[in-house]
Image (tube, rainbow, N blue to C red):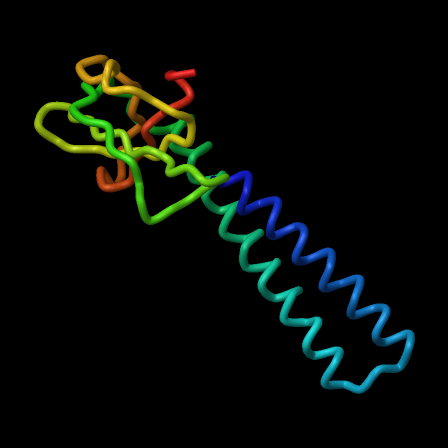
Length: 136
């Protein structure tokens, strides 16, 4: 999902910048130029959010405490649809503390009971990263 957000941010930013330059060159009214700036702002916000999430994940992988949580359940995330399918939420637990992570590929209940790496921040235990790349 971070990749999709990153790509959308780049696309919106490029389209907005190109249209803004074209509109200025053609000497369109200022209101038309302001409309294209909306694309730039939306793209920049999406890009910033994606980069922050990526940086936080990298920081947790490098500095977080790695624990192996037991997968307790897998459920579809019906609030999101990607290519007509719903991603999954992996629910896991370590020493009674619940964690959950997103997973985009199809998955079965067969992984329930297996362990998965979770990186937990040493400063704030509420910040964590369920490493779903271990399932690939």
